Structure formats: structure tokens, C-alpha cells
Image 1 (spheres, rainbow, N blue to C red):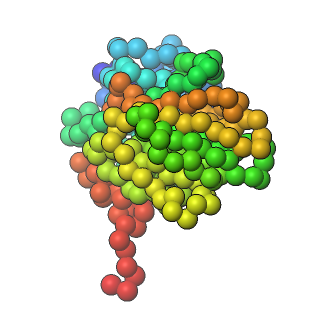
Image 2: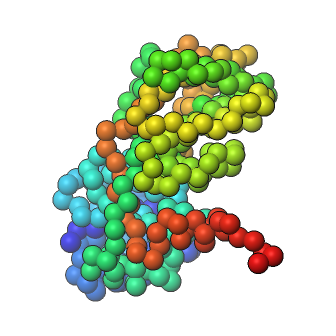
Length: 292
């Protein structure tokens, strides 16, 4: 088995501890372990010596698995390496919430043992693909997002107007700080913080969630995931921000943004005792009532 390991490119004590446990276990199981070239530089000398020749900059189809060590943000960055290769991703959580990265450091050995035995399922996560007119070179390579694509104001305290079309039919013009188009995976992230609904990963839907809208009737909207969404921005400033997960670019107001469902999915490894509904109850305290 050939496994890639990816993580944050800065040093964190709890990440170092997790990597040590992970590497010790995988080497004991005779697994071929390869570290991402920037991530390995943050590790101690012992880990670097044990993986000196096993370093990668790009992934290819020879890898069976990618292990992301960090938080949910690390997984969002990891998908830019996996892209459309179909390599399953495992998330080890050394961050905070850990909604995608569900394996804790003290669970590494037991979790990896289950994975190596095949005791898991694959959760296929849809992505958003964005294009702009005129074209923008900053998104030509990584034009997709696992969580959300968000349009927001730049260098101003004034609201912007986001003219929105669904399948070329006019929906409305949101007068707000911005607009989020979220996948089911991203529904528990930024969209949720702005009042959006939680969507189960298997649902064939996306969510449009305005950011601090001034129109009181502008509520989050669930749309089919085969919908083409077209966005145009007007505002007092000449530019606006567009984020693809954690990647942010600046665009002029003359830009037309078109978002569709991507032609590929990301495969998340889901342990049998860490299914979405169980994570929802544990991480978001779903439905908890302290009176009962």
C-alpha cells in the first residue's frame, strides 16, 4: 500500500505528536509512506531520516490514500493535490472542530488499523467549479471548491449588490455583505455561521446563503446541484473578493462569475463509528437540550 501524508507547513507540537504516532504505526505495517515536500520540512530529524527518499510534490494514480494531518482547513488545501485523481482522503484532527478531520491523535492506531483492514466506507463529496468572464489566471489551475464559493465586499464598509441568475433565469439581487454558494460538505461551515441550513453529504443540493443581507426577505435557498449559478457584483468599490474555500482572489466588478457542479468528486474515508449524523451530534451538539 502506498500512502501520502500532507499537513500544515508550519510547526505545531500536537501535529508533530500525531505524525510520530502515524509513521510508527505505518512503518510497522510495512506501508510505503510518502510526505509532501513542504510538510516534511516541518518535522523533526528522526521523521525526516525515516522518509528521506519518500517525498512528493504532486500526487499521481499510484497512491492508494492521502492522510491529512491538521484541521478541516488542511483537508480543504489537500483537495488541490488530489483533484480528480480519486484518491481517498483520511483526516487526522490536530485543529479545533474537526468536522471533516474526525480522527483524534489518541485514535490513530485503532483508526488506521480499521482502514488497513478495509473497515470503512467512502463518502463521495461534490464540489463547485467556477469560471469567470473575462478569464482569470489565478483560478485556472484550482478552479474548484469543496466547501463553498463566496462573494464578498472589499475595502469598504458599504454593502454590495450580487445579481444572481439560476440557469440563466433571474432570481434576485442580494443587497448584503456578500453571498455564499455552499456544497453539502460546506453547509456546516461558513454558510451555517450565516444562518444557512445543514445538508447531509448525500443530498443532491447546494445552498445559496446571503452574508448579512439588508433585505429581510433574503433567506437561504436550497437549489438542485445541477443548477448553473451566474453572479454579477455592483458596489461603491471597483473590486470584490471571491473565495474558493480558503483561497481568495480579487476581481473587478466587470467580472461575471459562473458556478457549476464539478465533474469529479472527492472521496472521504468515513469510519463506521464516525458517520455524518454521529459527527453532527458530537461536534455541533445537534438537538441537545440540557433540560433533558
